[in-house]
Length: 350
Image 1 (spheres, rainbow, N blue to C red):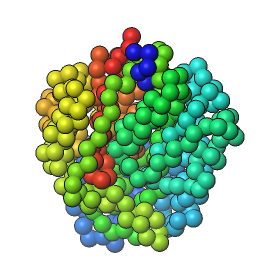
Image 2 (cartoon, one colour):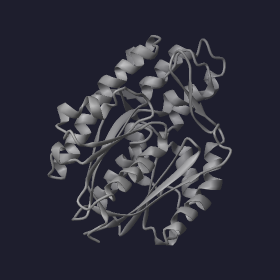
Image 3 (tube, rainbow, N blue to C red):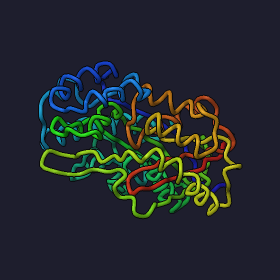
Image 4 (cartoon, helix red, strand yellow):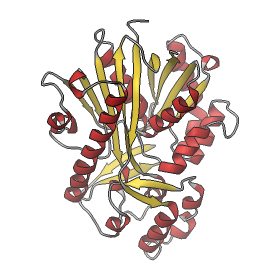
């Protein structure tokens, strides 16, 4: 297995500001109840989301005022840059490597952007080599913790010994909108948080786990399930009520196809490591995967502690699974805009 891509390390990071679910509920009631007649029917989502707190790029008071693109993207550049450095530095240190050892950096984010990209802006601060390959990716949403990991794996496979740094950063709270009097916007304020994760991958050698397979499935005619609408104010959430039943109905067959293309089946998987999109989505995934209710315990724990951070969230779950003891074979799964499903299988190496 000398030519197999290994996961060497994993690290996570979150912004300093913490918003409890009670604080989020109270702020949303103050900001929306008097202007949105359906708010009282939706307020229960704060109690039912399975979230106790989340971290945010800005303090709660920042969201009391309207913000446009400049405010949002300035905040994104500042906080995303800080989280990139923190998560990447921790991951490299845990792999006993330096930034100068990195041959390629894959950076994932769908909640903001900078040009030049974050990896270029931070190259000097990190200490990347001038010949580093940069792969910034936008638009994969919640699936990107797994699909982006797969992109990084394929980069690592390019040559023996290649070191790839994978960084995924999402500042979902910067998309909260005062002007959007809609069900999806209220749900977003109850569900989403901010965070980042970084992994170090190498083609060959030792590591925490060997990457056995990667795969994706794009569902036809599903563009309206999840995504962004973009206007003068910023991003606006697109989130269909049909997502949980869709996941329950469609995830199993899609996953079976991905695994079969890699010579595997669900029976071969000892532990599914899932992106916790929300409590209803987790229940739908347990049903789709024929798991006992409550089986996705680390997923619910991460959701409670951090909310849905979009793409990094599944790596927060993987970190807890590794700490608890990685099984012989695990499968990371996430769904996101497209609508798509992604899967990566990992084999324990020690």
